[in-house]
Length: 278
Length: 257
Image (cartoon, rainbow over all chains, first blue to last red; front, side):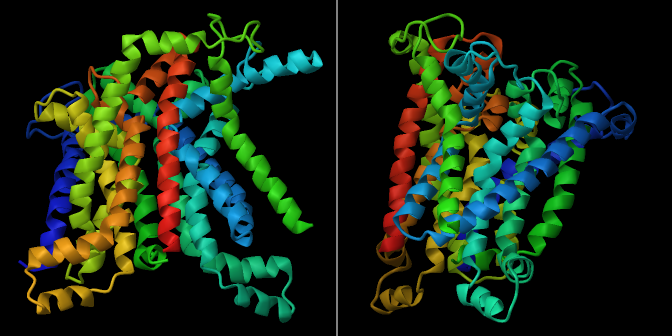
C-alpha cells in the first residue's frame, strides 16, 4: 500500500466508526415507528411528518435565529478586535491574544455559571455591588432571551476571533496603502480591499460560530430559565422524558440537514491548505 | 488617537471576558448558604469544604482519566493522520482532508446524542470509557489539524536523503520525521487534554453514571447552589489555565524558532 492511504487509515477507520456510523444509526432510527426501540426493516416517514406538523417549528426558529444573530454580533466584534491585534505586533498583541485565547480552556459551564452569578438579582455580583456602592436596586436580565443571546456571544467569540485574525493576516499592508494613495476612502478600502482578502478567515469563523450556536443548549439552560427552548433541548426531551427515540432521531436528522446545507457550500469555497499553511 | 482607541477597546473586551470568571472566584469566597454579594463575611471555608469532600476528587479523577486517555490516543492516531493530511500527495487526499474537518463543523450536542443512540444500539453501557471515545470523535480531527500545520513547513527531501543513506522506512520516520513533528505533537496533545477537560456537550450524553467536572457544574448551577460549587470550579479551572499557559508559550516559542 502506498504511504498516503496507509497513514490515512487509522483516522479514517476511527471516524467511520465514531462519526459516520452513529449518524447512520440515527438515520435508521428516524425511519422506525414512533415510540419503538428496535431497529427493523419496516420503514415509515411518520416521524418526519410529525416533525413538520406538531409545533417543532418554534425551537428550530429560535436556534437558527439566535445562531444567525450571534454569528453576526461576533463578526462585528471580532473584526475591529482582529485589526487592533494585528496592528499592535509585538508584546501587546502577544499578551492580548493569550488573554483572549485562555478562556477557551475554561469549561463553558464554569463561564456560564459565572455569568449567571454576575447577573443574579438581589445578591448577584453586579446587583449586589450596585446596591453596596451606589445604593441602587436594579433588576435582572437573567432568565430572558436576551441573557441567552449574551451568553452565546460570550462563549463563541473566541471561535470567531481566531479565524478572523488569520483572515486579517492575509491582507498585504501595501495593498491597502496603494488603495489609499489612489484616493480610496476608509469605507471603500474596507469593502473593496480588506473584506475580500480576509474572506477565507471570515467564512471559516462564521461557519464555526454558526454551527456551534445551532447546537448550543447550555446557554439556554443556565441563563434562559424557561424563556426559550432550543432545538437540542427539544430533541433531548424526546429521547429522555417522552421515550420516543424515533421522533428524537427524526428531529436530529433535520438538524443535521440544516447544518449540512450551511456547511457544505461554504466549506467547498474555502481552500483549507492555503489558510492553514500560514 | 486611533491607536489609543484600539487599546481601550481591547482592554474593555478582555475585561468583559474575564468578568464571569472573576464572578466565580468572588462567589467562592464565602460560606453563606445563599448567594448574597458583597459577602457579610469573606472566608476560604468553601475551599476547605471542597478539598475535604471525596466527591471533589472523584470528579477530578474522572475528568483526568478521560482527558489523559483522549490526549494520548488522539496523539497517536493524529500523527499518522497528519502525515496523510499534509505530508503525502495522494489520490483521495482532498476527500480525506474534508472528511477529517467535518466533525469539527458538527454541532457537538447533536454528535453526543447520536453517539448515545449508537452506543445503546450496539449494546454498550455509557461510562467514562465511552466518553473517551466520544471526545475523540471531535478532538482527533482538531489534533490532526494542529500537527498538519507543522507538516506544511516540512521538506520531504530530508526523508529521501535518509533513505539514500540506507535508513529503513521505520528508521526514517522515527529519526527524521518524528523529531520535526515533535513540537506540533506537544501542542496537539495539550490541546486534546484541555478540550476534553473542559468539554460539556459530549460528556452530558456519553458518560452514563460517571460525572465529569463540567457536567457537575452544569447540573448543580441550576438546581441547588452552594459556595462549594464555586470553589470546585475554581480548583478545576486553575489547573487547566496553567496548562493553557504552557500551551500558548509552546506555540509562541515554536513560531520564534
